[in-house]
Image (cartoon, rainbow, N blue to C red; front, side, top):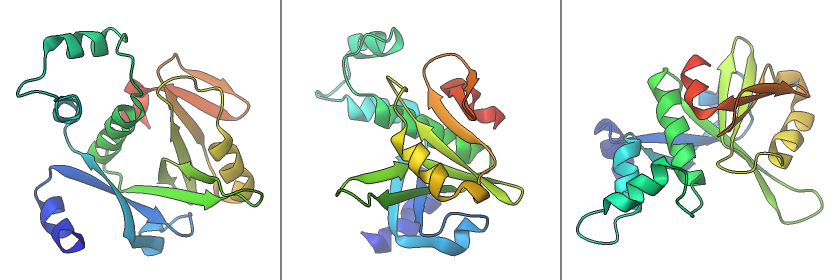
Length: 174
């Protein structure tokens, strides 16, 4: 599969996010080419494919999705939308994972962008955004490298305890 990645990327049908081993400015130098996540370049197509259980997708799925009544974890849809918007703004996509010192739990920062000589961790939440343990641990570990902290969620904008809580539609303004 790895040999197909260049062809897939050149088709512009996917966006790739590389794991960065040492988050900071110059993340392209620290990326791990063997660890990556792929996102579709078209969120609408992604939703259609994700919920395609038959030859065609019924409109009821879209109606429930649009009215926020689809009872399914939409985290992957929101991450895909954020990936698409960040890429459209000219950002390369990077993410970071780290293990816990006290358990086998992995913490993940969904996206990292750079701003000047600092980085901006972005955590995407599709539902309840109150918990952001990954962001907290990451910011404690790399506090001197961070400019802005973002939680992307489905609610209104707010700034609280040094974190910008952004509605998904505000990503193009980062």
